Structure formats: C-alpha cells, structure tokens
Amino acid sequence: MQGLRLWEYLYCEIYQELFVQRNYIRICDLKPGQKVEAVFLLLNSQSRPKRDGSNFVTMALKDATGKITGIMWDNFAPLINGSIRDNDYVEVAGEVLLYNNMPQFRINKIAPVPDGEVDAAFFLPRSPVPPDQMDRELAKRIAEIEDPDYRALVVAVFSNSTFLDKFRQAPSAVSMHQAYLGGLMEHTLCVVRNAISIAENYPLANRSLLIAGGLLHDIGKVVEFSYDKKIAYSDTGRLLGHISIGNSMVEAHCCHLGDFPVAKKILIQHLILSHHGLQEYGSPKCPATLEALILHHADLLDAQLSNFTEYMAHAGRTGIRWEFSPMFDRHMFGASEIIDDGQAVSNLARELASPAAIKTSLTGGNVIPSDELLTALSKSSVCELRLK
Ligand SMILES: [Fe+2]
Ligand SMILES: [Fe+2]
Image 1 (tube, rainbow, N blue to C red):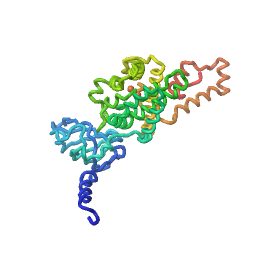
Image 2: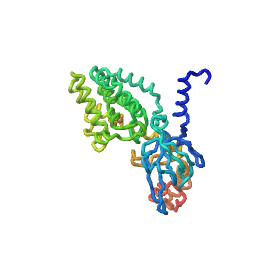
Image 3: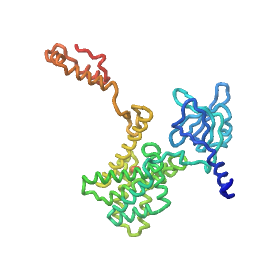
Image 4: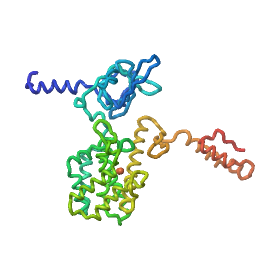
C-alpha cells in the first residue's frame, strides 16, 4: 500500500471486489471440454420433469457474441425460488459439452450478479462503425439541409440531448438488420446516403425534404425498442410502432416551433408514414410523392443489404453455405464460391458442345429429350444423363 493514499487503496479494493473478480468469457470462444466460471445474461430458464419425477432446468445464456443453452441437474434452487429471474446477470460454473452436435453448458453452480457490478457493454453487440464517425456524418447531413424550415425541425429533434443519447445507442431492429447498439444511427445515415445517391438521377426531388425525412424516418425506434440488457420491443413499441411514434414526435416538434409551415409538415410526415411502402409492412399510407418513393427504396435497400451482409459474415464464420432468411422468405447463398455442382454443369455443357455430340444431334439419331436435359440441369448432376 506504499505510495497509495487511503482513498486510493479503498478504491482499488472496492473496484477489485466489484469488477476484477468477475470473469467474462465470450460465448463464441467456448469450446467443448472447457471448464468455465463466468458471468452471462440469463435470457430465460425452464424447469422440466425427469423420468424419475424430479426436475432439471434448461436455460438460455447470452452475451454480445451469441447464445448458448445451459442445463442444470442440481443446485438450481435460485432459479426456482425467484432469487434469479429472466434477464438477470448470473455467474455460472460448469463445463461445455457437445449435445446433438451443439455446444451445451452443463452448469453446476449459479448465482445472481447485481446489474451495477457488470460491464454491460460485454452483453450487447455494438455497431462496427465508430460513434465519432457517425456523429460527424450526422452533423454534416444536418448542415446540408438548405431549406431553413426542414433544417430547423431536424435541429430541434437532434439538439435534445436525452433524445440524441438514445438515438446514438438504439438498435435498428430486434433481429432483422443492424440489431446492435448504434444500429439505428448507422442505418439512418446509410438510408440518407442511399437517398441522396438515388436523387442524383431524379433532380426533381427536393433534396432538403429528402435528407430531413431520411434523418427522421425511424426516430420512433428510440421508443419502440428497449436496449439496456437485451434488445427487445418495449410495450409502447409493440402497441404503437415506430412509424406512429415518429409521426407524433414530428407533430410535437412542429407545434413547438410555432410557425412551422403546415404544408411542409404534412410532406415530411408523409415520408415517415409511408417509408415501409405498403400497409402490410406497417405503413398506414403508401408513398405518394417522389421523395417518399425514393426514401422507401433507400430504406428497403439498406435493410435488405445490411441483413444480407450480416448473414454473409455469419456464414463466413460458421461455414454455413445456405440458410433460410425470414427477411427474404427464401434460402440465401452465404458462401463465396460454388462447389461441385457448378463443375458438373460445366462438364455437361462441354460434352454437349463437343463435335461428336453436335454431329449426333444433327443427324437426328441421338437427341437428348429437352425435359430430361432440364431435369439433369436442375439436379445439377450429369450422372444419370445418357445420350440416347
Ligand atoms: Fe422504419
Ligand atoms: Fe429505416
């Protein structure tokens, strides 16, 4: 303790007690056979009956890098008696095993960890784009709004520090795209970039309205989602949705600004209300102006391409080649190259283009029936294809 004053010594002791002794291990790094003692977020747990009439408990644990299933055969009283609840941080000890070819955490000990003793940043993923970079781009986009009314409205929204803090933290979605802290800001700025690029081809578009609408189109998401421990819908979000929340926010700000022109307010509200494009996708109105059409496509483009690039990154890490996408409602190709089947089709094409095959075909003696050719191509296999 030499050289340390008393308060420094106490601070070090307390700090060590609170944080240093907590162990964090990323779920994506867990390996079968590994003994683990670390803090995770408990998503949910469930008590299930064993064949002998006693119970065991299964649970889902999470951090910023993923989820893992946990199982407890004994010592799970804290999960049953309410001293640990869903969405609590827990310190667990056990071993990672393989079950049905999937990692499973066999847990021997579990204890609650108070929220204030945990580094929350470890449990929620964050945008790969540096916050400073996004702050600078936001300021630049606001400065590009030439129309003084639209700029005043956007400045009024983003100069509220409580709102801005939430906007910088909020995710863009619960799961579909940019579902991480900072995701809303990343998405918003990308939508504005997309919209500006599209508008270069359609000079009739009002650039000020478009940039303002792009910056404001998803502001309701700061209320639609909760994102303190896990990313989820808030009650208000489920009941009202970000489109109607954002529309109300713009209405309130325009009221506050006093003399905001009604026609401009309606045009920007139309952008918010219509940006999902169709009523079945949550928009009460479909796009009916050039700016609304551009914004809708700019928004959809970023949502779809961000979803797909996140899937490609996931496929690259896991080796998955095809996976069903809820966003696209079809299987999407996540690998970087086609294997085997492509070669088979090339061989078939080469075989069919060979002088011998062409000659045979022209003489009319041995023609491949078109339906058989199509079947072979669709199976991507030449094994069963025979020249008749
Ligand atoms: Fe939206
Ligand atoms: Fe959006």
